[in-house]
Every structure is written in C-alpha cells, then in structure tokens.
Amino acid sequence: MIYEVRTYDLKPGAIPQAEEAFAEALPHREKYSPIAAFWHTDIGPLNQIIHVWGYEDLGEANKDTRGSWKRPELATKNYSR
Image 1: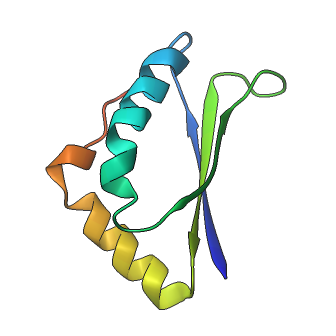
Image 2: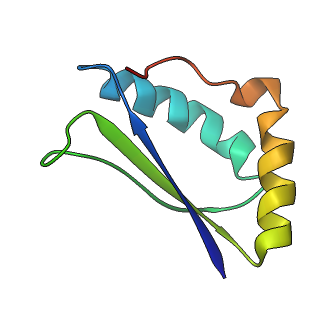
C-alpha cells in the first residue's frame, strides 16, 4: 500500500472555504482513489489542511494522480498563502 500525504498552507481564515471546495470536489476525486484521511490544523502550524490518499502500488498512484489533475471539476481554487 502506498499513501500520498498532501499538506497545504492556506491564507489565514481560508480553511472553511477550502474545506467547502474540497467537499464539493471529493466525489469527483474519489473516482480515481479513495480518501484515507483529511484534517486541518488547530495547533502547531496553523492554517494548514492535510489529506491522505491510498493506492495499491506506485503505478496506480501515478496513474490516478495524473488523471485527476486533468479534470476541470477538480481544478483548485487558490487558498494558499
């Protein structure tokens, strides 16, 4: 099993909007792979969201990641610092 962990530093106060956008995109993204975890920080480095995706192997991870980035419904909004 391969896990991809993504951490994003957001603009202060942007977590609610980023989580809402993530929730809207999640059904489309899960067509490529299931989500393993999602959270935001309350202590330590603030204004971060972290999500984890699970894959059977590295080949599946590379294929799914490339495919998902091409989808317009998964286009990212800029909540980053």
